[in-house]
Length: 321
Image 1 (cartoon, rainbow, N blue to C red):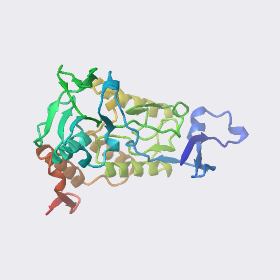
Image 2: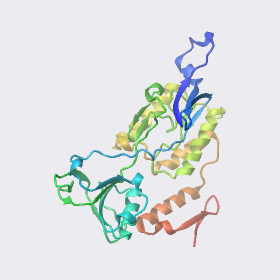
Image 3: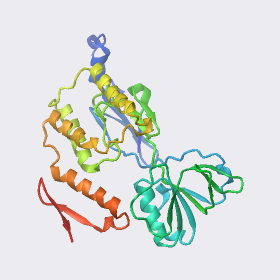
Image 4: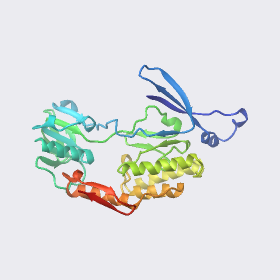
């Protein structure tokens, strides 16, 4: 297990008076790990790729009066099968991918599901037993769940499908010049690296993306930085670009916790990485297939997963019967 990652400067005496920016450019990394017995080992590396993901530390929003709830409380991170909830009343809080999929599975085993969320009402067909509602705002003294529209719902199970927090316990954010929040890590140049430390790469920080093609582009760009194929701008410019990208999103009304959500922006982002690093861009069929799956999901949320596809070229994909 990784215990600590920190920058390390092995410099000659005559180099100590060089600019701080140049020192950080040359940073190596001390990585301390421990085995099952607790024995620690420290090694030094030229670069670090953080590929730990961000789907392991559940985000549980604060709901006033939670102590009054008399039923079972869990996060989707702990959900495995629908059968234990058969016949029960379940309020699912959150209607993104996990909330919708779990609600459908619960309905199939006879659970009565209240799908509570703050999005516009879902227009895809929902199974019998799933009803949409406004978000939960508090828990009454009798244990019922008070909704934003003023109504109340009684439930035996409250399931949070409310996403995850970014968590990197082995990193010192302030030392690296970045701030870590529940749904956000900034500033990151190109959504990848702290501006002051261009040998530290966070792979897969963005949300609502086509995952592995996105990871592929990020890794190819990072490797090009390390081998010198990409000439990075000065640190001050990297900092400015990273902050400006976030400020532009905030100016469009994007909430801070959604600043790393990409959706349609992901394709231009991947194209820019490919152009800058000189590797082949994603083939058009990848975007086309991704958008087809999302279209099917909107039209038939109950059965879209049963469809299988394969790429048959850079421009084309086909459905496998």
